[in-house]
Length: 161
Length: 161
DNA sequence: ATCAATTAGCACTGAATTAGTGCTACATCC
DNA sequence: GGATGTAGCACTAATTCAGTGCTAATTGAT
Image 1 (tube, chains in turn purple, red, cyan, blue):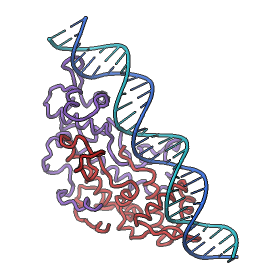
Image 2 (tube, rainbow over the protein chains, first blue to last red; image 1 turned 30 degrees about the vertical axis):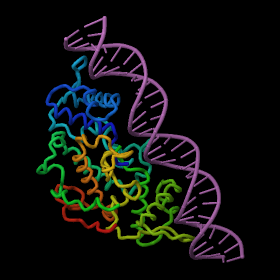
Image 3 (tube, helix red, strand yellow; image 1 turned 120 degrees about the horizontal axis):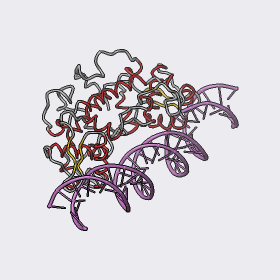
Image 4 (cartoon, each protein chain N blue to C red; image 1 turned 45 degrees about the vertical axis):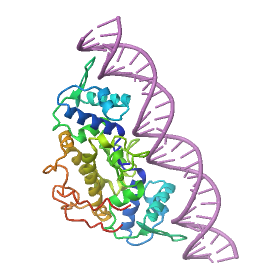
């Protein structure tokens, strides 16, 4: 329901921690000592991040993980993609809509919401691509990236309910 | 995994159809005749939309559903909220983070990703709030609404609720 | 008055996804 | 060689989601 998975959360937490530690290798255990995150699961996530080239791993004693790239070049979008696959908003926006084979959207030809939804999806995606690890660590006002109306300060929406 | 549910898709399709039909009441069956959508499920969705005041319903023969508001005032965000609850991005951004009771985010105090994620979530939310039913029906290039580069700043319109 | 069409309410089943765990092998440092 | 730590694989349990069944209430038409 339009929510990141725990895996992604854990992954982000771990990555942010790595940024904090400079280039040092940090072990899964070390992270779990700080944040209440199931160790085995975090390990699983870290493996995925390694496979996707976001972090480097080093085995053995004193081993662990470290960023394989700069905090600026790793975005939330990258992480989500690595951990959950590329985000789709509706079943019919899963990249290739051509084949009317098995899993693809039945409604396709008549579906009145394809394009607009597609556009929203792109906006979300762009937003995640614009949020780097660096900006997660440094949650300063930041001149541009995240907020598009500069004033996310006054958010009128939340209140009700 | 960051995807709308079928319920929401079906709901949007139905709503768009209602817009097309002007103010006429349309029945669930009628919609299912056009789009390959499971009837009972659509009925369920329509009920939810009714309960949330997005559409009016009329029972009996010739009954059906019609928008309870203007297509401009109903946004994708409204629909998603009605059908899946208010969107959260991570477990810890589920509105009230105060109580450290059962389900709330354990990491809270140490969680390094709360705020930034919160901001992304707001962006997504805003985007959905800025996409009205009308704009789904009229998928014209649209000069501003969706893309955030050009400041969709002007538009706290959603007032109702 | 009766019948057919249609929404309202409630509860349930089955499938898919996600969270989390167990075990073993391999690598590295001391 | 032993302790620490990642790699890989497979599995279980919990949660969420899609879809269905059945019955009651409402309305219009005959």
